[in-house]
Image 1 (spheres, rainbow, N blue to C red):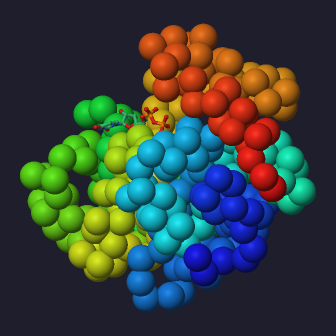
Image 2 (image 1 turned 120 degrees about the vertical axis):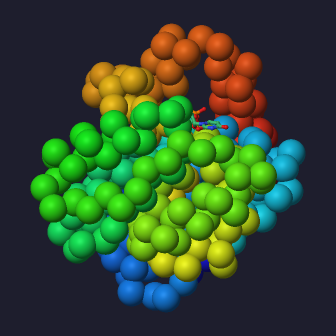
Length: 244
Ligand code: UDP
């Protein structure tokens, strides 16, 4: 970890930052000549990391773990710590794109279903004139495709990279390629954000987000997630019975 202070939640670090502070860190990362990895941590990540030592190691080595998930704020409080606010990855991608337009950071969008990254690039370029999207590609997190994808990104000269392969695949993909990606300074696992940007998926209404009920909206829209979402009550119980 290279950034400000963290709260450790069941062995997973979460940075105590606001969105504005996180953006300031991205600015700093851009000036340092190496790849910086950003993860958007939520309770599902924390529970997956309990069973997956490689994922846990990657999150511990990441330069910034954003508190994406209201459950993390409750968990921190229970541990006698404080996370200042929720920083949802799906909102932070817009802020990063806006800053990329202002600072001329070339952006590459990797992942999601075919056509989605291109459509998301169109939406972002419309919204932030001057934004330079140097590449979009669905590809696949399959190791067989690794080399060709890395070559594509290196040829593009991207400084900012969004990887939309879902967790933990996207975070493992970034970790695996952190030294091979020559021009990327900041790589972010963005989950379903490209689907949200294009309108293929719709975020919960603001009142539900404010009430900490975004998970309920997701369950309603994507009921096949129910098994994965069992991680939420398991997370709550584990935090409740953990020794702070
Ligand atoms: N995805 C992909 N290839 C894969 C698995 C997932 O491109 O092998 C994409 C999927 O199309 C979606 C994104 O990864 O756009 C995130 O998926 P999900 O919503 O499951 O991730 P989460 O945000 O819950 O981590």
